[in-house]
Length: 332
Image (cartoon, rainbow, N blue to C red; front, side, top):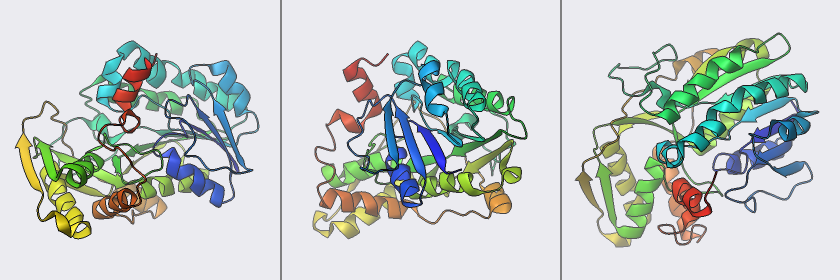
């Protein structure tokens, strides 16, 4: 699995994953539409960066030639971004998915890793949501994420391995930063405004540090195919309520910025009822993997990046917010 193509590799997770894979000796091709640019990616002799749309199957198929593994991250991520232009979002997140899988298989790729989402479970009061839990999506984003999964497994053969990852909400610092994810949002507000607004508060949300996300994807390149072929894995670490996360954020930010004295937490109503407690025992049982980084680590990493002035104008620059940037460029 030495030659890897990552769709959406210039995005938030890719900005951490790509340097990690290069450091591990992989040859990496990033195929990305570059809404957020690629200046944050490293200059490296084993990195090829392609400006391309995943809906252009013919162009993508040419880049699949010589690739051992496709790691599919590209999508219109999160509900607000999807709702901005539903037809466009469906074309990116669903319509082009099966043609992409077929093209990768025909080009000789041996493995296809699909980044789905734990949000496919919707709302569940089950004490532990395992991979066998019914998918009850609340939004089109969740629905199409889930609908792609069987399309991958439909094309699996002895020579073409498909595996699906359902990650929790990712958090922490990345060179292509996002401030529209729960832990990152709360941290940004705590540092910048000395105030955290919690929408709802009782909803349970699983979280995963971005470094652990990168570790899981690298592991999927390395484990024997018989352990992952046709499998789906939840990957999360800490399941906490939004209010508990806010309190953790306040604690860490006050440790890092003691001069703030205190940070106010304000509660308001929400129209986002998603609540679920995902169980990630399967990936530990089958592959021996456990996350290593906590929510508090993610908050500290963001604080450190802020202190180094790596995240200027963090409240207002549209590059940190997917839906704002897509709206500003008229993505279609």
